[in-house]
Structures are given as C-alpha cells and as structure tokens.
Amino acid sequence: MRKNHFAGLMAAAALAGCTVGPDYHPPVTATPAAFAEPQGAPPPGASIDPATWWTVYGDAQLDQLIAAALKDNPNMAIAASRIRQARLQEIVAHAADKPQVNADANVTHVEFSKNAGFASLARLFGGQSGGGSGSGSGSAGGIALPGSGITTYAVGFDASWELDLFGGARRGVEAAKARTEGAVWSERDVEVTLAAEVAQAYFALRLDQQQRDVIQDEIARQNRTLEIAGHVAKVGLVPQIDVTRQRATLNSTEARLAPIAADIRVRTHALGILTGQNPEALIGSIDQPPAAALAPAPVIPAGLPSDLLRRRPDIRAAERQLAAANADIGVAVADLYPKFSLTGMTQLISSALSNLFSTDSLQLTGTGAAMFPVLDWGKRKATVGLRKEAYEQAYQNYRMTVLRALKDVEDALVQIDAEHTRNTVLRRAVADAETTARAVEAQYKTGFVAQDSLLNAETQVLTAREQVAASDAMLRQDSAALFKALGGGWSERDAASR
Image (cartoon, rainbow, N blue to C red; front, side):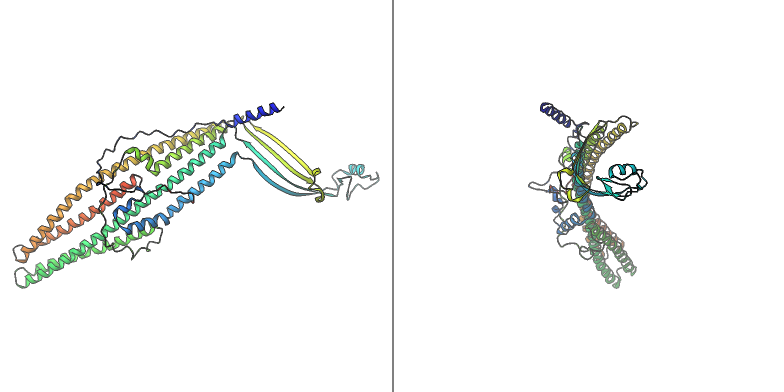
C-alpha cells in the first residue's frame, strides 16, 4: 500500500510539472546596422548621462522644473498606481493554485411543525400512549417531537484545492509578472516623455523671452534713430515726414511685444500644469530668464539602432505585454483539460454548547472531484483562438513600436543636421545685417542716404536676430526630441515603493 501511495504521489508530481501552452521566446527583431541620417561626434571628453540629459544645458531653472514634474505630475502618479495594481494582481495570480482555507461557525435552530406527520414516530420513541393527542411539545430520546425545536452548534474549518496539473495557474502567474514588469517600463516611458515635454515647453518659453529682448533692443535702437531723425529734420537735411515714418516704425515694433507677452503667459501656464500645479503657479518665478545663458544644443551620439531595443522604455513595455499575451494562451489551453479538486472539512457539531468541544462532536468530510469538459459548443477552443489573436496583436504592436522608435531617431537626426546648417547661415546673415545697418546709419546722419534705406537695414537686423534666436531654440528642442527618441530620462531605480 505504501508503494502504491508513493507511486500515486510521483504520478501527481509528474502531472503537476506539466505546463501546457507555448513557452515564451523574446522576439528577434532585425534592425539596421547604423542610422541612415548623419550624426555628429561629441567633443573629446564630453560626457552625457542619459538619465539626466537635461543638465547639459546648464540651466538650474530647467533642472528644477523637470525634477518637480517627475515628482508631482499626475501622469507619474497614475503610472505608479498601475505598478501597485499590477503587483496586487500578481498576488491574486499566485493564490490561484494554493489551498484555500476558511474558518466557519454557525448556530442552527429548527422549529418542527405540529402537523408534519411525525406523531406516530414521536409516540414510538417518546413512550406516549396511543390515545395521546400527538401534538408533542418536547423531545425525548434525543429526537425532536412535532411542535418542538432543536438547536445545533458547529465550528470548524474547510479547505479546498484545485490541483494545477496542467499549469494554467502557473501561466497566470507568468502573465501577471510580465504585466508588472510592463507597468514598470511604462512608468519609465512616462518619465522619458515628461522630461522631454518640460524641456521643449521651457525652450519655447526661453525663445519668447529672447525674442522679447531682441525687440526691446530694437526699440531702443529705433528710439535713437527717431531722435537722430528729429535733429536732422530741424537743420533741414531731411523732410519732417522722415520723423513720422520713423515713429510709425517704432510703434509697429512696440506692438509686437503684446502677443509675445501673452505667449509667455501661455507657456508659463503649460509648465505649471506639467509640474503638477495650477496654471498660474509659476507666474512671476519664470517670467524672466536666468542671468546665465542657455548652453548651446549638445552634439548627441545616437549610437546603434540595436541599442534602442534595450534603452527605449516603450519597446521594453511592449515586449513585456507580448510575454503576458503568450502566457494567456497557456491559461486558455489549460481550460481544455480536466480539472481536479480536493475538498476537506473538519467540524465540531453538537446540539449543546457544553459538549461541543469534545472528540465525540468531531465530524470529518473529504471530497475529491474531477470535472471533464465534454460539450461547451466550442467555447474553450474559441477562447484559445482569442488569446492567440491577442498575442498576434501584441506582436504587431511590438514591431510597430520598434519601427516608430527607429523613425523617431532618424527624424530627429535629420532635423538637427538641417537646423545646424540653417543656424550657421543665419548667424552670418546677422553679422552682415549689423555691419550694413551701422554703415547706413552713419550715411543717414550725414544725409547721404534716404531714411528708407535706414529703415530697411534696421528691419533686416531685427529679422535676422529673431531668426537666429528661433533657430537656437529649435536646435535645443530637436536635441530634446533626440534624447526622447533614444529613450533618455529614466534611471534604474527601485520602484518597489510604488
């Protein structure tokens, strides 16, 4: 008997090691050997920490804004909550193949009907005469008579265990674990996106401030020109209409300040929201740029396309969702096989509390059950098909995520390269326009050129300086986009507290 018992245990163990459904293998994704678009080489000795790439711009205000966003933005709180939710789901999945034990206690009281037809039984066991009424108001010999009641007391434990012979529960744990890991990578993707959004909004704000400063400088220059025009008109070298024209130009330039001031407020509101505050929270604190100028946009080595598969959080999250979808197939396949369960119950039952806790009150119940799927009209097989289709969708989503990541990097590289070329040309244009404006102004003071020439020269200087400021801001925004495309902005920190 012992040998048979041991053999049974071994057979059960062998069955318990059977896990149906496909085993997961990470997808093999072919990537180009190198990016097609040109990328510059960083200066010798230059080092950029991908986890805190924004520090390369040397702006403490930007550092503070990104730190506040990563701490207080609602999207970060949502991502952290999803991690905690996924971990709780892991606990639920782990409990699926464990015995479930419950404690229970109950008191039952039954009042028997006087008309239940038990009168003859009551007379037999209760010693009543045949001429009795049979109504029965009590119990005799441990049997409740008609019209009387009985109370029973019970305490005990029951345990149930569905044997995971075909690995459905293990596949469920596998899926839950993969989804937790996917939630962690999704949180890191939120970090990447959020840091880039704050940086780009901040660079747009700084551009507005630079354009405001350029216009204010130009207003000061035009005021000086207006003063010169007034002096020259007094001595009769130019007509009075030149003064009127210069004043009109000055008024037009001053009018450009109002829309920029409004745009600064809009950018400030956006940064307030990104940092998890009210829109007006940052008004007054970032309206004026810091004394230190922003560092030029850095040269960022894009590395190899294969690096993206490890660095981009959205790719890692998509791969974990694929693993979870694969495990879900195993859960569905396990439902095609028989299910076996064991149930046991230990109770103390008595009609009196005084002897409830005695060995004579002990009652044991054991049940073994098997459920064999026979006819479900294709429901279980259809469920397997559904899970396979979900896996196919997860796989295609993974592929698209990889392709989108490659495109993001290629787009950022080509935009940076083109903007670098444009920026170089625009800086030459500013130098030429300023040289021309100084020469025309000197000629205008002596009456050798008309005022139109001076106004045109001043307009060219203003336009060229604004274009350079816009190009500098675009380079910074493009570099932030490249950092985001490369998956920069997250660190390998412990997310266990989330």
